[in-house]
Length: 264
Ligand code: NAI
Image (cartoon, rainbow, N blue to C red; front, side):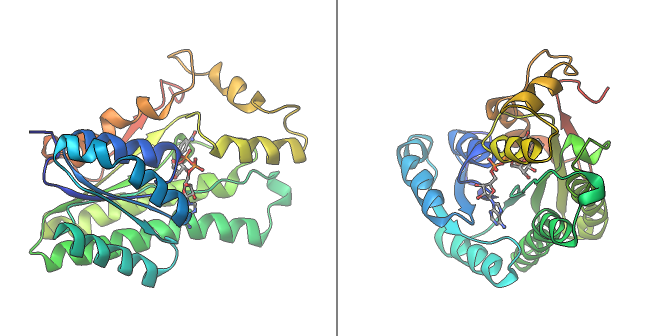
């Protein structure tokens, strides 16, 4: 019996990186998992690559193509999961984007894109998951991906920081509003995790002259990390499985920092 056996979970932004690792760890602990992503083809490939893993632990796996900023698509994803697994127990709002820009150059377009995916996308995911959980009679867990950027400012990423602070306040506010439905809302805040997201960050930082070569930003961050290295997605998933499991039932409104001590 796994730690999340029989629990039906959705992970958004699960075609790669942290989201994929969250989904795979849930599968290892017996959950039914939907890998959801705007990149529908890659989400499908990931789901197919994990069929044996799901069988081995006694769970099921599916995928959904979804833009988390589109309420209709989010509804369709949840309906698909309910049809496939019978219910929704755990919703991970993990999809996110970053696009560094010098503060004085930040445009409305840059602000709107980042706030829409990271902020509005999280809100819609929480609302639609909660509606489903309430319709099932209450109970369930929502887990949001925040960031060290929701705890302090960083150079050249003002809209990203603002969007991740929004994730924290949404987590705390929804924890209050949804408590009466026995729904808990938590989040986790990674530090620097080596994923493909950093390739975009590198390109943008080089464009604005804030980095000279790929990898420089991650390297500079590592100096501040007490654990002495950046994280890999594997460093994150012990906590995320815990937040999806009954072991965390008494927690709500909390953000767990998983940053190797970089914000101390
Ligand atoms: P990633 O860029 O490797 O993966 C993000 C995934 O989200 C991609 O598969 C992408 O297709 C998907 N996505 C983007 N926009 C979407 C949308 N509108 N609808 C549905 N899916 C969408 O990023 P990574 O590193 O795995 O990040 C995952 C989460 O963790 C993000 O919320 C990010 O902000 C957060 N995070 C990442 C850190 C890092 O160092 N990598 C540190 C702190 C937080």
